[in-house]
Length: 154
Image 1 (cartoon, rainbow, N blue to C red):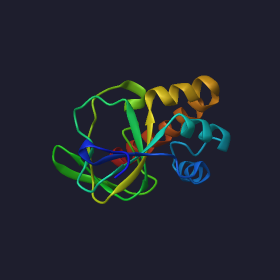
Image 2: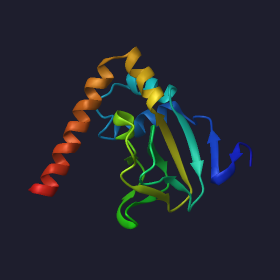
Image 3: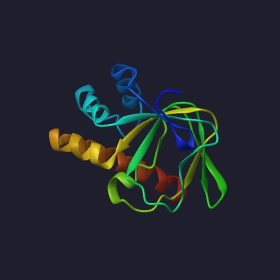
Image 4: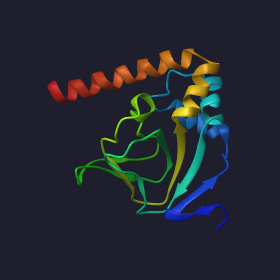
């Protein structure tokens, strides 16, 4: 397969920036961003296709990128126990964009998946060009923290 790499990884060119913008617009982390801002994030990102069974990210490893599931699904595990699923529109690994800390969970592709890979470097380039993105991302992350807090503490 053209572009195939070891570990089931295939790099592909962005199929359609317009459809990817619409994917991102429906994701809470990016919902506050304008199409222009999302276009810049996409321009500074890449796409990967991984085969079913491939480990997308491994708990405990340092991460410098987040993944948006564009097609397919994956299982999210913490300490070997399933804690959730990542389906189309899900973002995994986003904390690594902020603190470069260890992954808090493993994510394994259930099916072949197509992912948008948002690197720390790519996101910083977008923020440097449009500083308002950082404020919008912080707002989205604060909303997510509040949701987790409510779910845990009531």
